[in-house]
Amino acid sequence: MEKVLKKKLKVGISECCFGAKVRYNGKGFDYVKNFGRENEQFVFYPMCPECLAGLGVPRTPISIKGGSGQDVLEGKAKIKNKTGEDVTEKLIKACNFCLELLKSEDIYIYMYKEGSPSCGVYRTTLKDKRLGNPPGVLGAMLLKEGFFLVCADDLESPIKRWDIRRRLNAFVWAREVEIENKNQLYNVWHALKFLCQELDEKAARSLGNKLSNLNDTQKDDIEKYRQMILDIIRKPSNLSRIKAWLWKNYSYYRKYKGIELDIVKEPTDLRSNTILAEELIKLENKLYNEGYSFGSSPILYRGKRI
Figure 1 (tube, rainbow, N blue to C red):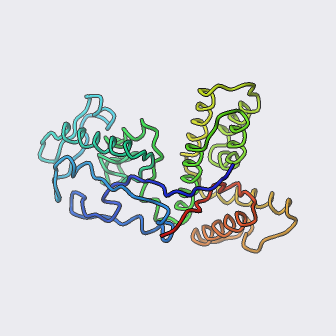
Figure 2: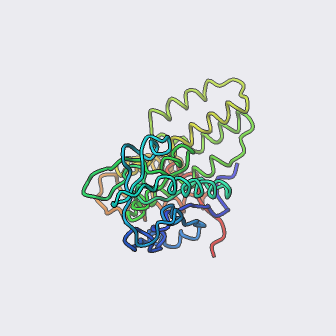
Figure 3: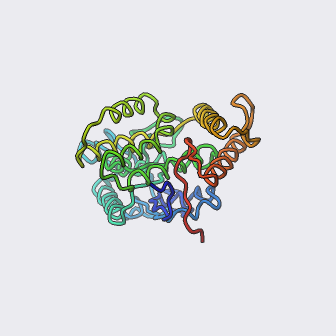
């Protein structure tokens, strides 16, 4: 079972995060530049529901009134601009268009702008430190459809960016790899279990126990367990867990190979997030070249770079 990705990943992205100046105030952000050379792993599909709704640039800001984006979809809340104009129907239509476009291209990854009443997931306002009424309208649709969601702001952090990339690779691989029987399911779990334990140890241990007690499996059962793995991989890690599992996985390697690597620092050694991310990338590349699976980052992209 090959544990590499060779095709580019299709990624939907809020257009204002792709450098397009389509925000209500005519501004935009180029978040994807933070990937550097790793940009070549992706094909981006920029979209702006508010522009597609015919609201224009610049435009009067809109907000959710009376609930969340999910409430808007259920007819329990409205979307209005600052002048009081109701744009609910226009925005729902535009968000549905975006979702159908993503699905038609088999895209299940989306990088969103937090704070947007359209694309936001955990915030729908950027005013002060308020959360607004999350999720936004498109955000609610993407959550319901089970998309792998990436907050574009997180791409500015080297360690969060590394975490996003390794989870994206694992998510795509786990979603698309062929699993026709119990043995193949075990092999997928064996490849991803250390990553899953880092992300949610309780859920991973529970899933591991269920898999160890499996007898025969039907296709529906296999897909149920695949979905449980995907649900864990969607969850971001944090700095302390990343450092702890880096050392744990390196310790397995050191014991297995009987050698130490000077590229890996002790867990208590102080270093910046940039240095830590570089350390992780060096280790995952070295272990891959040796044919050894790095538990923290088990799936790598090895496709053609333009």
